[in-house]
Image 1 (tube, rainbow, N blue to C red):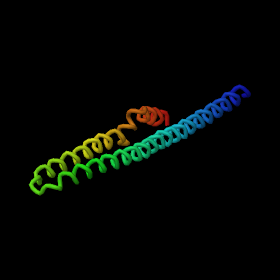
Image 2 (image 1 turned 180 degrees about the vertical axis):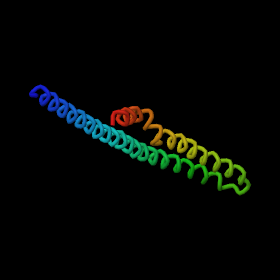
Image 3 (image 1 turned 30 degrees about the horizontal axis):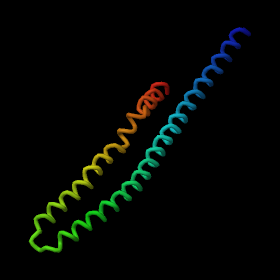
Image 4 (image 1 turned 60 degrees about the vertical axis):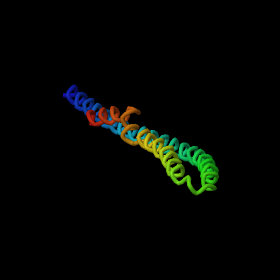
Amino acid sequence: MRFIWRLVLMLIRQQAKLRLLTEVKKKGAIAYLRAVNGSRRFLIGALVAFILLQFMVLAGFGALITGFMLWEADHALKLQILFGIFVGLFSVPALFLSFLFSERLWYKASGAEKLIDAVRKSA
């Protein structure tokens, strides 16, 4: 009888350990996702500041060129081409960066997807 009681007690302890381990895995996955999201947001903020500085330099350069081009009235086509170039210089990197910092890409590239799948399977 004592052997059965020890076996039951051992099984209960083992079940408690498994629950605790599953809970620790869940909390670890949440902490990992928060850290990945925090680092992604920090990089976005730093990049936005850098791009803003570059945009100011580019805008100053564009204003200078546009000012020189405006001195002659028959250069309307040149101004339209210049405007198109500056719009392209702004929009192409913006599209690239929006893809680069998408949450889906970071979720897959950081390994969080595998971690979440492993936690789901163990739960």
